[in-house]
Length: 111
Length: 231
Image 1 (cartoon, helix red, strand yellow):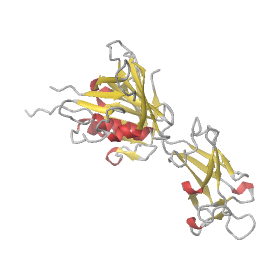
Image 2 (image 1 turned 90 degrees about the vertical axis):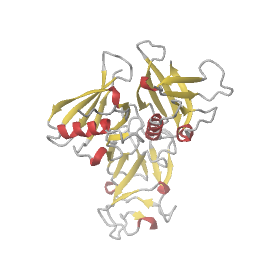
Image 3 (image 1 turned 60 degrees about the horizontal axis):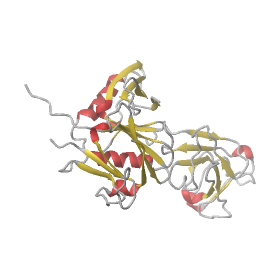
Image 4 (image 1 turned 135 degrees about the horizontal axis):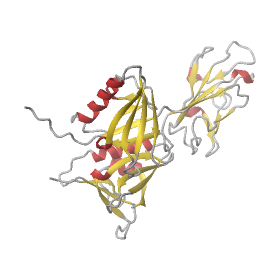
């Protein structure tokens, strides 16, 4: 079995410090919602196993929340052979340009 | 006995009805949005260009007197009572944060301009939200987090999801309003979304009322969505 995982970077280059990137199991995903006209949040069960949430905040162009939610959702449906999906890779130039282009920055608000 | 294949994950999208605001009897060329329909008002000078909201006007008078509304050539011949939606090109300016939108006059733009009636009671506008900009405007949930659909009455039901706050003692609730007696049709509609493994390539718009997009042609005639989210 291949466990599907989601990869994010915040944009720091080089990407080599604590908090610069995150890999999270896709089955921890809880949901997404807009926070404002230019930000959308993504919620996961906490990656450290605590009974709480990890929150990623995406910044994007004005009014693009729906587009971001659909693009990220579509990306999560991918079935890569190794199971790892680059949702937003601002440093490594991930293959999913639809999400990487829509999302201008990523913040790991709560991990 | 034939066994069902493993149901794969799906992602379900819901959005509320876009806010609308009637701005009647406007006397100024500038239109002032309030927080009555969208709170906050759409921010950013590009909000109209980005399609976050639209403004329309009902033509009140074109009978040749001084109270007439004037429309640029883009609009063709506009009759009294006709509703005209302004394209982005008609917008002269939109304030970055306070909701003041000014339309170009016909004197300023002969093609896309619009000059209001000199009779203030003749200028009735409608502002309509088209895109989500607030925390209770839309939600995306994994289908695997849905826990059930509870009937409320003949025209509504609550879809329960595990809360995005991760609180195991609470849920997020999506209140869906549909045509009378359509509870089972709605349940079937959602079940189709979840169980059909052919729906693997895209997020599923179950009820995007704001965009007017519904699953399977909207057999339950869903007309409204509202969220009660755990905090």
